[in-house]
Image 1 (tube, rainbow, N blue to C red):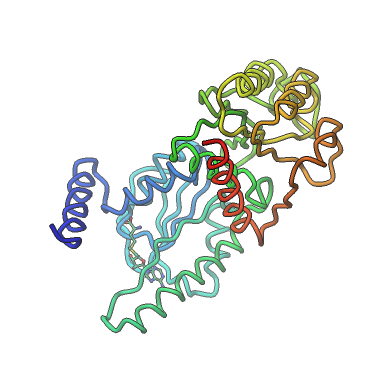
Image 2: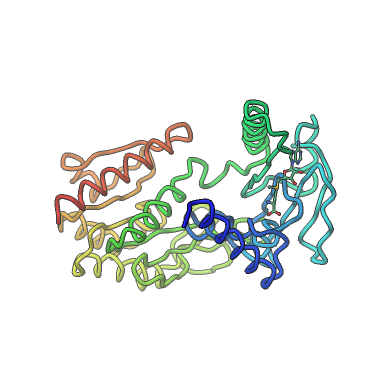
Length: 323
Ligand SMILES: C[S@@+](CC[C@H](N)C(=O)[O-])C[C@H]1O[C@@H](n2cnc3c(N)ncnc32)[C@H](O)[C@@H]1O
């Protein structure tokens, strides 16, 4: 069995699967895998797909964002339109000067995610093909910089934590704790949800459309869910044989609950390998008491990939120590 024979078999298998599931391309599976690993797109988001013809990635993106989201596919070639109202196609060269303006106009605002599978027509001369591919990748980054919504998860903190959890779980590590994520409906942020990393149980952390609970900005904290999901997850993290505990995040919404604050304190006292996220400049005694025994890393847009790699190395080191 040669490598090329195995690769061909794999390609044939994905082509067959794509045909069965009605995807327009077998690379739809490449995107499905990436979404599963990195939590790349979420329900109700607005997604732009650059280099989208024939539309396999658009189909997967549409399945993920659901009826409340929107998918815009762009390609220099004609893309056969989709019957759904919230899936649009645009024939355009990504090097056109007005590409970002046209995307923003079509989406009626910024995008939540930009995908790119842009690839040049191969002429067979490696250096030319390679230079074109690099040029398209750079162009995709330029467009993303102009059309992405930089509010909320601007530095990519949530993405780093999700990727870290996915990476650890893939290695068979027992990860416990909580993560939080924003929830959007029709492109507008309506609140935040909190998830128990070990069980997947989810509840509201805060909502706009809620009349009770402590107010933080334009949201009301849903204390019952925060404590039912969040406090329970942290307490279980202490009792369970967790290899790593994640507390994402320790912020003004979470810290309105005394039970949550005490649970955070208990996690820190348990001295388990823990990754916690805290908004820069905040002062919580529960966090300040462990500053001397912990490492603080500032996540910025320009260093997030390095931070992600550093965290993976740290977690691997913990694994070696504890085995
Ligand atoms: C690998 S295919 C995309 C397949 C797609 N992701 C799918 O799942 O169906 C790459 C696409 O990039 C497009 N492309 C290449 N250069 C482009 C450009 N300058 N502007 C827009 N699209 C371009 C090509 O026309 C081609 O359809």
